[in-house]
Image (cartoon, rainbow, N blue to C red; front, side, top):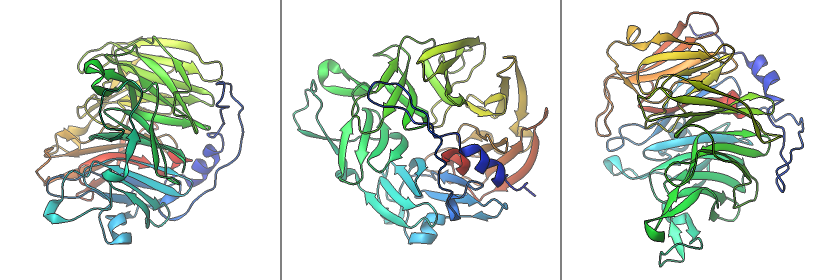
Length: 416
């Protein structure tokens, strides 16, 4: 039986997370306001699994693991009688609300969904607001050669993060956007996009994979073809990147972690299969690099929306799209093989999303299946839960066929 997730530890931990940042000039002003603790599906000891499903055959769903280990499937459908979306991409919780982002491209069995962006009560999963693609249009940025004044978002969506109901940040192939759910206004964030094809296309340069919130700001990587690898700070009520730390090492963004109260670590990598990665530690008050380590490891996030690395204790864990998990010590920077998932799920060779760790419990969540195709429903879906608090990983639970192509696993303590 799975160990009870340590609710008391999670509650003690979350108090330090929300140190604010003064937005106008990039200086910081830490505060220690403890967040409200929610009940129901939003309690810190629970875990949400966002199931993408076989998109042409199924709409998406959410599975919930309660702090006592009880599993409940289809919690959104059970609460509303409808599916929230098709081809789910990401979710976020803030201030008692769950924000669900989906591509919503298909209608399996002619079933309509609630929208591409759905806002629900996090404690009950009852839908409160829903937006279709037609509701989400932004003003053409200066420099675009598009003839339309108001432009549509495009799919696939990638990630979502929330500072408050007026600052909902969504990323897709054109850039990062700030959505105000109180007015319905959508704006593209200057500094997260560039113009391609001589101004005829808008192309993203930010990478919200693994975007994190520290205080009243969001942090993510950026770069690619148009710009050097960089760290971006996103602030409330601004349609422009707040601060940029440019010219960082590495070609692609793997992920980002909070490694101290006011320290974050950006992980960059080469192309998939290449072992030329960097861990870049940044003091977000001083806005400067405090340490950089090159590691001969493949930490690529592959094609997943989830980050290529996940942090628990003094280790980062990564799989680079495979079912063989390695870990690297942030004290010694030595890496080692840690888990071969094939030993515990030999008939499920496909990783469904990058591995996710719960920093509080030091549990590692690994989602695998026997198939991984958009139009095929797997025969076997596994969510394997490992206790990684010791030198050797211990499999504490195997959840079989109660998830469905998970695209993300979300320990709720991460939102406090």
